[in-house]
Amino acid sequence: MSKNYDVIIAGGGTAGLNAAINIPKELSVLLLCKRELMLCNSALAQGGIAGVYNSPNDDIGLHQNDTMIAGGFKNNTETVHILVNEAADAISNLIDLGVDFDKTPDGDYHRTLEGGHCRHRIFHHKDATGREIVEKLLAKVKGLPNVDIMENTYLSEIRKTSTGFSIDTWHDEIHKSFNCHFMILATGGIGRVYEFTTNSAIATGDGITFAYELGADIKNLSLVQFHPTAFNNRHTRECFLISEAVRGEGAYLLNKNGERFMQDYDERLELAPRDVVSHAIIQESRKLDSTDFYLDISRKDPGFLKDRFPMIYKNLLAQGYDLTKDKVPVFPCQHYLMGGIDVDSCARTKIDCLYAAGECSHTGVHGNNRLASNSLLEALVFSKRAANDIAVKNIDHTKEFEDTVFEHDADAPKIPHGFRTETRHIMQQSYFVIPDKKAAVEGFERIKEIKRELSTGKFHIDPDYIEAKSLVTVAYLILKEVI
Image (cartoon, rainbow, N blue to C red; front, side):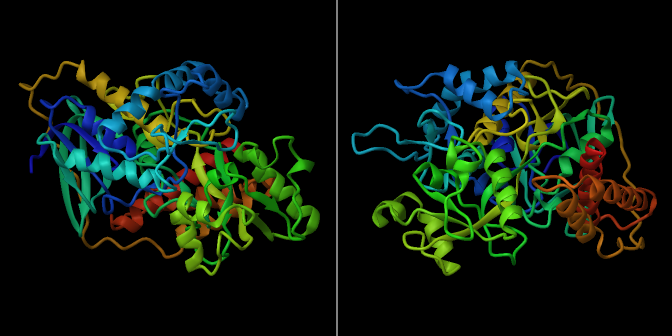
């Protein structure tokens, strides 16, 4: 495996894989995945990908308007326009790669409805769209001769050089360094900064932390989205998501008394945007002094539900609930990040030759609240734009890379136990759906202490240290915006 590359991509989800596919084949690429390839938030996406593609009863203006409404009109109108205009191309490319979107009996693509959308425009593969997309993208990337892939490899440091970047990596206690002309951060979200999240184990905000340390702008990190209907088993940190599409197919939200309540909070009822529904649940919870809430779609045909939501049905059954018969316990849970590494319409950061795409980036398309099923779309659209921008750059292959030395102390102590647990508790208590300002102020002081200790202490650099530093940095940046 080469030490020098034209492009290094950190992250193997939708954004990272799609960037690798679209980078010119004459450029060498290294794709880094800190865990196994399929462990990413993209693969967990259930609902689908929103877009106007051969849709006679829809148009991009309506998609744009729905996106702006969901985002409280705080969206970047330029990037929203790009998003909805390039959706058809993104969906078409997926179809060309073999993504098996569900179809209707007449052979047309089945488009479902989700909260905040005025039209049925969600293309999906049952209720496992993300996995289907990642599998097809990954199959394509594995066949590219110009792309090397490293799994279970943690990015531990990035340094800017006159020729691009030098990076240090960790794999099974072995450090290796690489050089590149361009770097794309596609490291996903920050969910593990909370006690409960729908995110996978990789979502610790590493890319955001590295970009911050390099001097990139980090914007709107406090815009955290809480999904209203995560399965509420009260036991596991990673909460199984009950897709927005279940409400799109007619599920009711019920309080502890088995009563619908959304009519008291929003005229769109269960199909209001996620932030509205999450706030309604918390307000109803306080009114009734109970966290017992349920999703009920048992009135629908059992055969239809099993066919439409096979993964959700199977996972709930394993937990002792039958989607076709039972009320399913749900409660809001951290789900997505609208803020991140600030980028322009070509996914460029303020750091020369550094790009960011996917959930770790801030394109402004989501405004204050992401519209359902716009996340996979954003990852595809702007990762391709990053690749296209790199394609037109002139690379001087005659110039040698700088020699960069990364020093490691094999005898350095490991970080003190409990930093990550304490950080998660602070965030869960101070900055959940309806923030607690007093707890945020107190929590911020403690987060600053932990951040200082991690920054000044000479600790052993391993995954525990890397992720703890990322989580604490993310918590610091979120609470700094809030207080």
